[in-house]
Image (cartoon, rainbow, N blue to C red; front, side):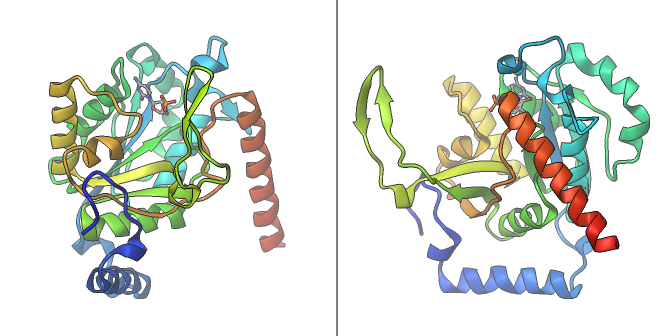
Length: 274
Ligand code: C5P
């Protein structure tokens, strides 16, 4: 068992748990189980942030990438994973009317549910999304609309890991050496081989995430991702490999990079057809 409050690698899990995980993944691939008999999985796609670094009148999630709002790319990316049964978009209350203009495009997204209004903090938005998921939902995948490029293989990986352990996230190894700083001073240098950048989706058993959110609210604690909240109630969280293309669109440079990724993917797809 990994120490509490850390994010252990799947590779340090016990051999029995690794065997269980790979059996489940293999059985899915072979279609032996089929998703319907498994846990019901809902997704919350968070788009209620202000995206202040973007400036402009349009909130970040509605900024177009390759002619389509970022939120639609993120929803479509999540819907492309057969393991996801329902999807609840969470947008700022003031932006709900924008979704009416996108009604036709939204209706084409598999598993889409009505959007709900988010809150002032990310955690409030997650709570609002959680409340809107169907009662039968057992696992919840929380995804940032600001990560519109996630691929179905990564989403499947993290859902499958959470089916086994109850809590799993996507992460990629830190490329740079990470420094802890305060003001102009370096406080310390964590071992780079132990530093990973967390991505979304992050997938949890619904009861665990709800408990973690309630505890954080009671303590007045604000985390920067959901894993942190689950870690602090003492639940070990596993990680599986994320993707470099699953970066968070934070500024104009990221937007341009996302455009490049999408046109490269489109060119690949056309080449495959030709
Ligand atoms: O704050 P950060 O940039 O990490 O936000 C990650 C995601 O959380 C974004 O997709 C943003 O729209 C969402 N968010 C939200 N409600 C908030 C704050 C952020 O849905 N109050």
